[in-house]
Each structure stands twice: as C-alpha cells, then as structure tokens.
Image 1 (cartoon, rainbow, N blue to C red):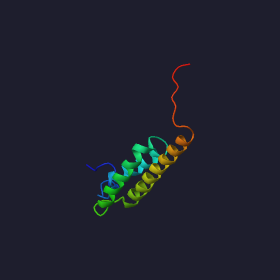
Image 2 (cartoon, rainbow, N blue to C red):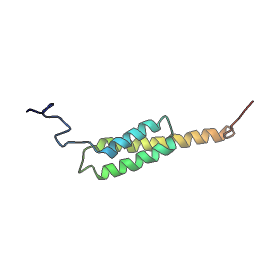
Image 3 (cartoon, rainbow, N blue to C red):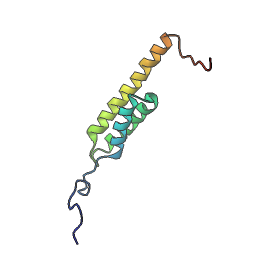
Image 4 (cartoon, helix red, strand yellow):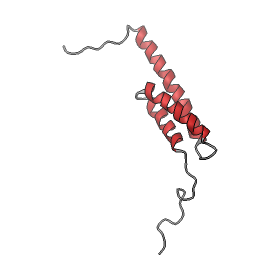
Length: 95
C-alpha cells in the first residue's frame, strides 16, 4: 500500500524553527496591537531562535523578528511621548 503524498518538505527533516516563526509573528502583529508586550516577546524569541539557528532553519526569520520587535518598542516610546506632550491620557466614562 503506497502512502499518500509520497515525499514532502515536512517529512524531509528540513523544518523551520518555531521560535523564529513566533518572533516574526509577534513582531508583525506588534506593529498594530499591543506593541509594548509583543515587541519584547519578538526580541526574546528571536534571540533564542538565532542561538538555535545552527540546529534548525529560520535564522533570517529570527533576525526579522528581532528588528520588528525593536521597531515595536520604539513605536511605543514615540506614541508615549506624543501622548504625554498632548496632556497625557484621559478616560471619560459616561456623559
């Protein structure tokens, strides 16, 4: 009985590092939402993935995640500076 899908890239043993993918995803999503949380996570995941790059593929994705994580943190600092120069944050509840 022959197996379905004979030879595929996933079965060949060439897999991308999961932390590199997580770093890249956190960096991209952090550009739009929760950048102060996802930015440092992207940096940490990317740094760990770069150390594991000799074992698994994904060094480029890890590097992109680190860069995007740094951009996320800088973006948060810029938005914080803009908010503080405009009188800070104000929450109005009710009428």
